[in-house]
Structures are given as structure tokens and as C-alpha cells.
Length: 474
Image 1 (cartoon, rainbow, N blue to C red):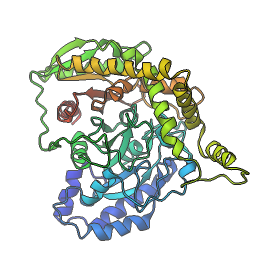
Image 2 (image 1 turned 180 degrees about the vertical axis):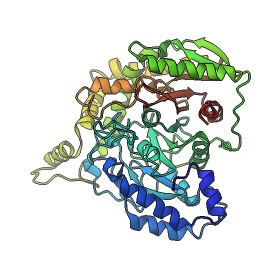
Image 3 (image 1 turned 135 degrees about the horizontal axis):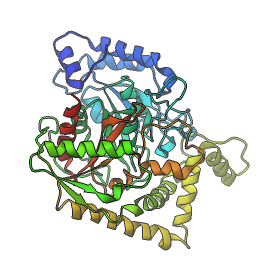
């Protein structure tokens, strides 16, 4: 069986045409059939059937009753290990549930497993995981493709029909970019809309939980259940969460769409430019007004991000020292040696690279020259968006500079890999919401994504625009 949407599965369940156990059986079978894609770090049939017993007692009023959800293995889960795809947390079993996953559990969701990711969410291809690479389900047999990253396992799980939704985190594009490469919908909400409590930290001022799904409506359903204020997270926003799914509206009449000239970068393929142009024309036909805009500090976004994010990572990852929990190296003769061996053996190459970059830019001689300057530039980037949103309702751009690429194509060149986030990083620095939806394909038939960016806390606006564009493919 293939279920097209959350509402379809709910209807079947409510009409007693399918049972909770049959739903579990269906997805367990699918996950086993596609285990070669290495989408899941943790998959346990017994744990799924344990959930079935509880979910069967839930009222049908629960909005996510029996809906199969995959969880990025960065979210702490009480009954499943949480590794952050790192050797250093290989055997870590949290004693608590993250805010986001607890909300999903309370609504009756069925967790089918923990998905693979780039180690500590540092990467753009899900190829830095201690547990091996995830393969994009859209790959041909002889050329494995990258699913994007860091939430590549979650995007691939939805694309491979191993769940109806998946949690992800987006620090610089880690939901939107893999959504584009896997041909699914992915939304990063406003920073602070979803609590970060219980999520293994990468860069605390950038990390934000979000979702993947097969369609815009399902994303809106999942986000309204995941979002909410949490006093345990000092950056959590105490705002009313709209009923996104009930208020979806494809009417674009009079909406002003900003098209930033800075996103027409050199080297972008004609296919991506064509998809961008097609989306612009589609919205224009639906009554929207097109307006060329400028976001002048966009060119500084990537270098700014790769100063701020590693700086915060070097601070956040200091807690993994082999003393409190997680991996501890053997054969050390002193405390300092134990720290050194644990961290050198426990962290992968990319994580160590970013810790070193972060430690460097925070060091006494370089703090002002790099970190403080980057924070000032970040403010200019954020101000660009605030100023432009005074003259347009939302901004339309490509999501990624390419379709899915061969798995190891950019592995030895960190700069090329970092450039995968060229279109997604600015919104992360500004803390604004962004959604990627599949819109067209390249000459090989691989999906290309369109990104819609909105004002702070105006997820409804970008859901509506995405909903309107999605109708082009129904």
C-alpha cells in the first residue's frame, strides 16, 4: 500500500478500513525492503509494535494517530538511542523526550525509526555519518546519488515512502536543500517557533526544527502540532500557533513576490533558471505581482555563516569529553590524554574541521576580527530581509544550485560542499521561515526545488504560496 497523505490514512483509520497494526506492518515491510539505502540508524520492529499497543487506545480525535513519522537522529527519544550520527554518542540512550518528539507522541504519531544525518548535522550530503552514507532513493542502480544534508535520511525516508512525515533540523539549509534533492516538501520555520530542547546542538543561534512531507498540506499539519512555546528553551517564541492546514489558501491575487537579483549567481544551470522562471510566471498568472528586489549583503552570507556556525559548534561540542556520557577512549594515562584521545577518535573529520575553525575565530587574537565582524554582517543580512518585506509579501528563489549529485562527488572539497547552501544560508542567518517544494526537474529527470521565504512568524503566507505552486502538478 502507498498512502498519499496524512488525511487519506486518517480517513481509512476512522472508517476502520485499516488497523494501527496493519499500518505498522506496511511500513516495517517497506523499510526492510529498502534497507540498502541506509536511511535509518535505528530501526526496531519490537519498538514499533510496542507503540501500536499504546496508539490503539488513543482517540481518533488525535490529529496524528498512527501516522508513521521518521525522526532525525539528532532529537532525543526516550525509548530509542540518539547518536547524532557520531561515534562519540554511539551508545547514548536519553532518559527524556525532546519537546518536538514529545508533542508528536502526544498526538498519537508512530515513530518508525531514527534517520541518518551528517555527523552533528555538519554536512550537505549525509556522507559524514559514522554509520555510513545514505543513498538518495531516486538514484539509478549504477550511480548512487546524495540525498542532500544534513537531514538527508529524513528527506530520503519520505521520498522512499517509508513514512508520511519526518522531523529535520535546519541550521544553514539542512531541511530545504535535501528536500530539493529528494523531491519532497521541507519547511524551516521561524527561529524559535519550535523548541530546541532535547535536540543535540550544533549552532544554537541557527538550529531550528522543521518537517519533511509528501505535500504542503501534510507539512502544515505536522508543523502546527510540533510548534509551541517551551519555557525550557530561552530562545523559544511565545506566539500563538495558527491552524496552518485549515487556513491554507491558494489565492495569490495582489500578493507581491520579491525576486532578488543576487540569487542569479554565476554557474547556476539553465534548468534551475528555467524552473525559477516557470514558478514566477505561474504565480503571476494566479494574480501575484512580480517585483525585482535587492538583498545587497547576500554575497557575504556564506563566509559569515562559516564563521558563526563553527564558533558555536566549538562551544557546544566541548561537552563531549568522555567524562559524563558517550564514548570514552581506552588506554589514556592522564585526564588530558583521555580528553584528547576521546575527541580525536570520537569525532569525524568534518566535525573536527569545524571545531578547529570555530576555536580559531574565537581565540583572543581573532575574536574581534572574525567573530564580532561576522555578527555585524549577520545583522546587515537580516536587515536586508526586513527592509524588503516592507515592499513584498514573500521572496521566491531556487532552493539549491544543482539537482542531486553523485554521492562522493564533492567529498574531498569542503568549499564545493559548503556552496550547496548558497541559497539557503541567508534565511537561516536572518531567522526567517523558508519552505522548499519540488517544482520541475533537470534533463535527467531529477527533481529541482523552489524556495519561498517569508517574514518572521508568517509561515501561513509561505504555506499558501507553496500550496498555490503545488497545484501546478496536481
